[in-house]
View 1: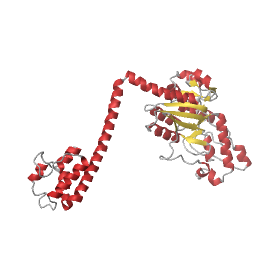
View 2: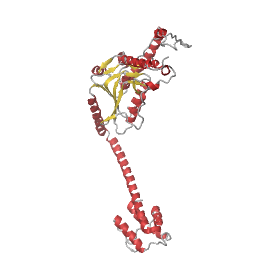
View 3: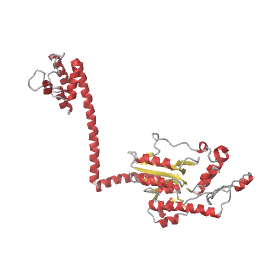
View 4: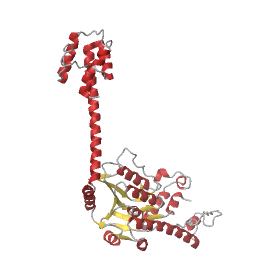
Length: 409
C-alpha cells in the first residue's frame, strides 16, 4: 500500500478543501517518485520532509509586541513532518510556546492563526499543553486568516480569541478520505488481496470499493474523535456541550457570526487585539497593587534583597581585588617578607597577635625606614590616618586590622 496515501486515510480535523488540496499534492508527488520512495518500508522522507525546525539557541520562533510574544501558526498542521504540505508540527508549536513562557521578557502569548487545520493525532496533546501554559502566563489566540478545525481546536484552549473580520472560524468536526483504486489496479493488471483473521482489519483499504460495514466502522471512529473535539470546545469556551454539539457540523463562520455564537470573543484587527492585551497586562498590575498590596510588597522586598545580594557580591569582589593590589604593593616593598605579610592578612590576625607571635616578622630584611615607607604609601593610597610604626599614640594598626577596618570581616 502506498505509505503517503495511507496518511490521507487517517482522521483529520481540517477543512475538506484543504484535505482535497493535500491529496492532490500527495498524488503529484507520488507520480514523480520512484517505487523505492513510495511503498511501505521505503525511505520517502527525503523527498517530502521539510527542513527540521530551528534548534534551541537559534531564533525563538516568536516576535515581541510590547510584553506579548506573537507565535505564528500557519498552514496544514501535523504531528510529524511526513508531508511536504505540512507547514508546522504540533511539536514545533509546543516548543515555541514553552520557550516564550520561560522568557522573562514575555508577559503573555498570542497564537496568530492562519490554518485550515490538520491531523487529529497530536492536537489534543498540544491543546493540553496550551492549557498548562495558561497557568503560568496568559495564552491568547487570534485569527489572521483561517482558524478552522484543528486550528480552532487549539484556539479553544486559549484564554481569549479574537479574529479578523474577514477570517473564517469553526469547522468543528473530523474527516477522512477513502480512495478506491480497484479500477486503476485492474487497468494496470494488479490485484491486491489483504489477509487477516480480523474482519475489519483491512476496512477502508483502497483495493476495493468501500463496503457498508467498513463505512460504518470508519464513521463510528470519526464520531468518537469529533466528540472529543466538542468536549474541548465546551470546556475551553465555557459553553454548554449541547450548544457546541449543535455547531459541530463542519461549517465555518465569519468572525462576527462566530462571536455571536460564542466561539470567539470579538472580531477586530490584529493591532487592536495586541493593544488590548498589552493594556490588560498593565491594568492587571495596577489591580494587583490595589487589591493585594502585601503581594506587591513581598515582590518588591524580594527584588530588593536580590539587588542587595548582587551589590554585596560586587563589593566583595572589589574588596578582594583591592586587597590583592595592597599585597602586591607590599610585596614590591617588603620583598621576601611579603609572603609572611600575606599569611597574616589572609589569617585576619590582629597587630597584638602578630606581636605575641614575635617570630613571624623577626629577621625582616626591611628596616624601620622601609616599614615607614610602606605605611606612608598605604596612607597616600587610602587616605587613612595610619600612625608610624614607632609612635605610641594612636595605637599602631596592623595590616590585618587595617584590612578588617577597610574591608570588613
